[in-house]
Amino acid sequence: MTDLPLWFDPSQVFISGQWRAPAGGDTLPVVDPSTGAEIARIARGTETDITDAIDAAEAALAGDWGAMTAAERGRILFKLGDLVLQNSDALATLEASDVGKPLKQAKNDVIALARYCEFYGGAADKLTGETIPFNAGFTVYTLREPHGVTGHIIPWNYPMQIIGRSIGAALATGNACVLKPAEEACLTALAFADLAQQAGLPAGALNVVPGLGVEAGAALTAEPRVRHLSFTGSVATGKKVQIAAAENIVPVTLELGGKSPQVVFEDADLDKALPFLVNAGIQNAGQTCSAGSRILVQRSIHDELAARLAEAISALKVAPAMDDADVGPLVSARQKGIVDGFLAQATPDQILAQAALPDGLPEGGNYIAPTLLGHLAPDHSLAQDEIFGPVQTLIPFEDEEDAIRIANGTKYGLVASVWSADGGRQMRLAKRLHAGQVFLNNYGAAGGVELPFGGVGHSGHGREKGFEALYAFTALKTVAAHHG
Ligand code: NDP
Image 1 (cartoon, rainbow, N blue to C red):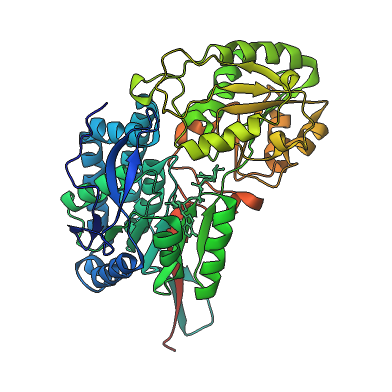
Image 2 (cartoon, rainbow, N blue to C red; image 1 turned 180 degrees about the vertical axis):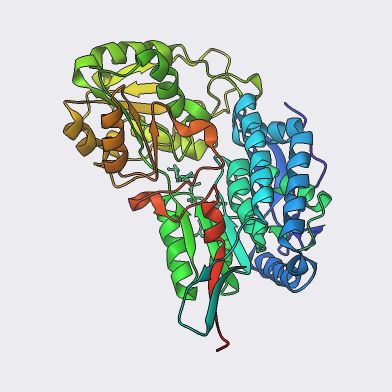
């Protein structure tokens, strides 16, 4: 078992710059997905803790934090990015142990978190309003103002990246944040709060309350003093968050996953495409909102691509997170149960390839063999529903129109990729694919903290990442001065 590099007590909540026990006094287990062993306890925060966190955030806005200039906020975020990098090994170990992510993937998340701090640190004093030409005798201008207290509910699959994109943008624009991490992934959220304090973030500007979604999460969404909600997770919970936001008339950003297509035409460079096609499906054991879980291939090259994918997927190595193989365990026994349930729907001839699970994997770990499915109608549940495991579906298409029809034929629309040497085709598909991001001859653009991200349809609405997020985390005020 890995010794956790904990320099704080994870069984406490972080409110107003102080660590303290949750009001109810209860804790929840942290289970290592690689082994099934309990490795720590986290606080079971409840409504009282959420209320205290919102009090603290309001006090920060009325005090030191609210008085800071944009440049000062930016400087704190820069320093925080440095501290994240200085603690890179500890953060990566915490994440790998907490969510089962292979160590090098956890290290990439640390780098992304630091990049978000740098990006939003640099952007803090670049966000401006505008002057608007208007009637004679008027001067009209706009101000971008923070919402106030913002609520952040994040999932367990990419805690550090989602904290970076959401908290980074909210702090850069002067909001005070209350963060409810997923009960399965709290350790790096708590570590981040401690580092933020070390970087000079005033007390109350960032508060972290671990706990159950139905308790702490629901309390946060129900609080009328929270003036913006940012949520990443399932469609079912996203709906609840949106309904709660509607009760209080607050804006909400929802990022709800997808069933993203990777569209491969017969003129594609398959040597270049292959590693992207596979990685987009198995990164973080497929527990990725933007996973490229549907591979659409032109029928003329179907068999060739199927053979090459089968070879690559069969060769994937599965191991405990700290052994740093291609694929680690799923985050929880519950998530493994969901994925096993999907796989049970496949008939033997629909399993085109499957990696072998090695002997000696810890018995309590949540391991699933990476799998390629095929011979499925595009409307089959396995080709429609988000599986959230290392499972991809290969679907043939005839021509461009057919590819677009199948690609757009789910309720989701988060990400899509097009693999083709034909520039005109790339542009046509980029316009017609239902997605918040389209990648041409690549997938994911290496994370791209600068690139606005979000979905259409059941993938959600609103955008995070890039400069765009700064608009979401501010309210625009128009000032019209009549001076004659
Ligand atoms: P959820 O959507 O339930 O969890 C996401 C976050 O919401 C967690 O912090 C959770 O807290 C919190 N939450 C849960 N219920 C409420 C509530 N009533 N009010 C406010 N917050 C709440 O996802 P699951 O973890 O249950 O995963 C189920 C499926 O969701 C996955 O199989 C996958 O398909 C999808 N998913 C998509 C993600 C994405 O990136 N888009 C990320 C994670 C999951 P807690 O976990 O502590 O209960």
